[in-house]
Image (tube, rainbow, N blue to C red; front, side):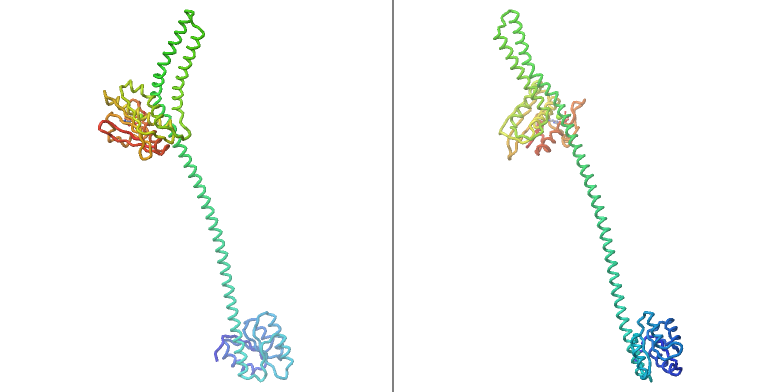
Amino acid sequence: MEKHKLRILFVEDDDLMRETISNILSKSADEVFLAENGLKGLELYKEHKPEIVITDIMMPEMNGLEMIRKIRQEGIPVKIAVVSAYSEKENFLRSITLGVNNFLIKPISYRDLLKVIDDFANVIFMEKKIEDERNQRFQAQEELKKAHVELESRVIERTHELAVANQQLREFQETLQDKIEKSVAEIRMKDHIMMLQSRQAVMGEMIGHIGHQWRQPLNTIGLLTQSMLFSFRNNNLTDEVFDERVSKIMEILDHMSVTIDDFRDFFNPNREKTTFEADRIIRKTISFVENSFQKHKITLRYEKEDDCIIEGFENEYSQVLMNLLINAKDALVHNRQDNRKIAIRLSSQLGQSCLEVEDNAGGIPEEIRENIFQPYFTTKKDHKGTGLGLYICRTIVEKNMSGKIEIRNTNTGVIFTIRI
Ligand SMILES: Nc1ncnc2c1ncn2[C@@H]1O[C@H](COP(=O)(O)OP(=O)(O)OP(=O)(O)O)[C@@H](O)[C@H]1O
Ligand SMILES: [Mg+2]
């Protein structure tokens, strides 16, 4: 029979019997504690807490039943068997109420005793297994709970981290947005300032144009006024003559103010895109410069092959042409003594308007070709150029009107082409 790892308390007042049974028990148990009465038995029980108690009932000092009652008070489900003579039946009944687990009838047979111990051992083993499993399950549940709590706290932590990261991202985006807006505003401002600077550069040309436009009408007004004075002095200034002269002067003044309006329009940048006839703007722009060109003995030729309608800003378009014409004039005056020529051509190509401005001033040297569109690049000495003209031309054509500005040298000069 398999030896159980058990500790047994055996309580018996008969010395011989205690001795004999103890020998049998030690074969099944790891340890056997012996007591000769209930009091001693209780003491040993409290000291060693054995798994099994086998006790006689009738003993001095404290009987077996009293001892069992006290042991039960400890609250441990220790296995207890009582040993009693068959004649003491009432002891068995009383022991049932004390929760005794088994009985042995005197005289105790070796087999019965081992069977009781074996049964107890099995029950203890099963109980232990169940307890172990329960403990394991409990532990697993605890671990699960712990893991759950940990997971939850990690989720909370991670959510918090994400929220912080999100907030930072949002702030970053906002500052980025701010920076972009600021830079865009700065660039716009810079472009605007450059545009103004460039307009000032062509102002000289415009003022020359006004001067010229006004010289003739001012002359006429002078003559009309003098002739009125003459008639008045000679007493033949009739009402009709007076009215006629005054309305003539008013007509001339109206005409003069058109020149001023043109000038003012040119310096008022268009806010809204409109559709306009390229031909009309080209002619008006030519009229601004032709007087000064004549003075420099420059022949200006304009050919219109097709009608072109452009969507964009007409004043800016005019400004581009003006810049190109002034550049050509400057180059001609600088490089040529005679036969100074500028040709302007307007045509329609692949659904786009194509404006060409060609001169015979010798062209643009290869080494500065890349630079001429850079802001503030100029080859003109003594502050005669700001270097903004072509930069503004490109901004207007390519940024504001989604077109293209190109240059190519010819044998005698250069051709600027503007496609919009
Ligand atoms: N038709 C041309 N022939 C030769 N060189 C030219 C011609 N057009 C421009 N250039 C060169 O390109 C440079 C840059 O021209 P841009 O119009 O940008 O500035 P600028 O004429 O020097 O000064 P601004 O136009 O501001 O008065 C000129 O200084 C000149 O060297
Ligand atoms: Mg220029």
